[in-house]
Image (cartoon, rainbow, N blue to C red; front, side, top):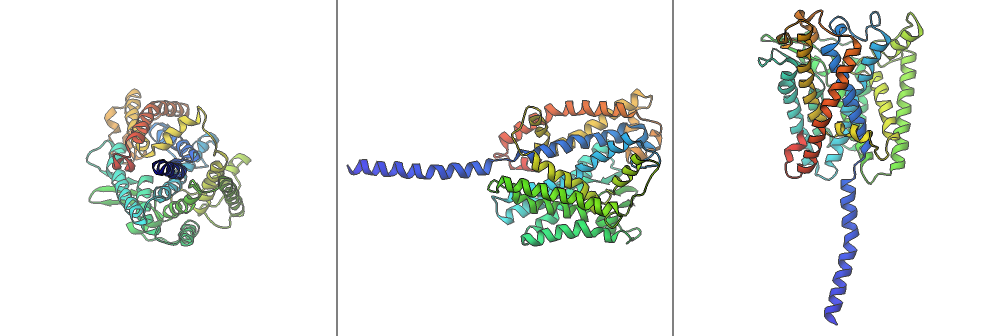
Length: 413
């Protein structure tokens, strides 16, 4: 009788403990797919801009946002890619929070710091080689991966702040940095690093600061602050309402500030030759560095998208999510593949493939003036690129998810 009672008590104890264990595991493994879906979409769109850089004939002559020379279609080909960098950086902040949700602050800070250093190294040497195919590294173009790396290093310190101060820091960096637009410090790499951007030559090596870091630090900190909303315990209905409200307020703020040219962008808008180009002028906001208005009109729709797409995946969105789960892998591979395809493109137009071994940005190379294809070809190359990348990303996504618990280094890729 005593043995039977002991067995019964032991069985009841196991039964009572099982639901708690199951719930804990489920909450840790639950993933909000709208994050990867949004990231996947912007990764796909981002490739369009990089293909345009290497293939479009007009990319070697003028900016697609130059209203005196562009077309509506070309402008929007460029404008839609404006969403990529801020969304990418914001979601990097969200992911940083989710990474640290079940880890100590010290562990999270160390991961952010080391991954930031790794991303800076990647920008300088892995992507630097991919953009130039020149192993002598005659130029360094400090772009979005650099900005994310520096922002992660700074975020490794910011996470020790109280939550309200993290939000305040993010808002100040995003909203107030335009107060510095009229501050110019000639020949200062440090000032370019922080706010203004610019080109420098050090011992014969060309360094272009394309992404000054102050506002990007603000955007990644904003993502980290909102990361809590994407935790499994957060009420999904409240999350959707909050994201939708904030997204609409961002767009409203953009329309008011931009419409009356009040504040938020050094490049004010003005009426143009027709209504279409006047609308383009309204949208022609500054990316380098990202102005307040640029951030509002890009992150506002992103917040709305996250609110409206939190639903089960279908056969199409499940394919897009594959790209969103392996952003680092995708980014590195697509740079190399675009450049390789551009070599073939140059050879097909009567140039030599070696003309694509670069000593500067591709559209700054004098011997490539006159090279390029029309915009239709650019879109066809872009679609082909995505089709080529999909099986590679699907393989790596499967490999990473199967092995990440065994190989911690996979979290850096």
